[in-house]
Amino acid sequence: MDRQPLVTLPEALTRVDLAPRPDVRYVLGIDGGATKTLAAVLDLRERTLHLGHSGPSNEDAVGARLAVKAVLDAADEALARAGVQSGDLDAAVLAIAGTDTESIDRHLHAARPESWIVVGDVVGAWATATGARPGVGVISGTGSNVFGVGGAGTDTRTWRAGGWGHLLGDEGSGYWLGAHSLVAALHDRDGSGPPTALSDAALSFFGSPTLEALAASVYTTPLSKGEVAAFAVETSRLAAAGDEVARGLFERGARLLGAQVCAVIERTGLSGAFPVGLIGSAFRAGEVFVGPLTSAIHDAAPSAEIAPVRMAPVGGSLLLALRACGHDGAIAADELAGLIDSVLAG
Image 1 (cartoon, one colour):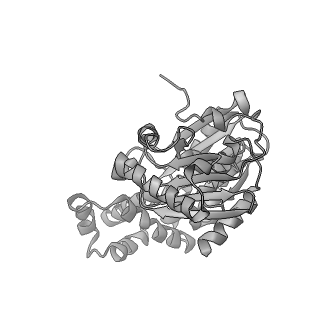
Image 2 (image 1 turned 135 degrees about the vertical axis):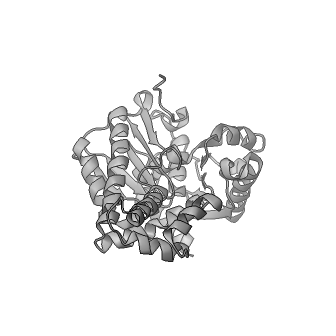
Image 3 (image 1 turned 90 degrees about the vertical axis):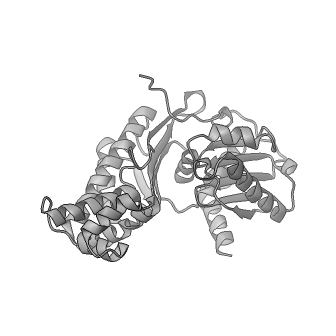
């Protein structure tokens, strides 16, 4: 069996000996997903940020042509707001969701310079979570994914665990929690599982008269991934209120997701103190989820620094773009996060 890394970093993002150019001023970062695309041009000289927005750029959701159009629309808007042309950019890194970023890469470079670097969104998430330093990014939103990087330069080691989608994985994600909450409600209904408040919550949330009718509707008019994942909010509420079944689901999801984090730590050779950044809506459940996940990770890495990530995902792409032009560390992650937040709020 091939056990090479599922995700590797382009050489431009691993080099530590790249001499910085004194004239670097503008870099572009893009965060592209299944619902929206955000582009940001950072002006290093003025310490200003200019944003562009567009629709989905996940090829799995909209196809390669529309995905690339969304990327270019967002990029062009950000460039226009910055008052520059694409030729003025010193580096560009695009973190795009989807299973085949190679297809996006081919289509994109028919319209933009070869120097624009396309990576998967999990790479952008890692950079956002760790400041593009050795460490691990843990994503748990509608789906889940874990990606980490250890070492540096020619000794850079990468590993991804999870990210196999809602039918084959996504352990500890909003979808996983929502789907298993529905299963727990059905087991309550037929007596094969313990009583749980998830049963009444499911009826109210999905507007169904009975659980059996709700179960039938899953097959006759399939619920979307987003609709199932949204029910995890109710699971979180009931877990906080003390429902043992709901709490058990978060603990089980945390153990499964923690096992993936531990696999990434082992494969990348990370040791000592390093960041493990938590990204995604599932972590809004708080201690009921983060607590057991932290315990699972600390079993393998007692000094790992586990914390929710406050920087918007596009920040990771910008940090990688700075690295690609030899200006790694030109702006601190905390400063960049604050800059992005202020522009988004404005």
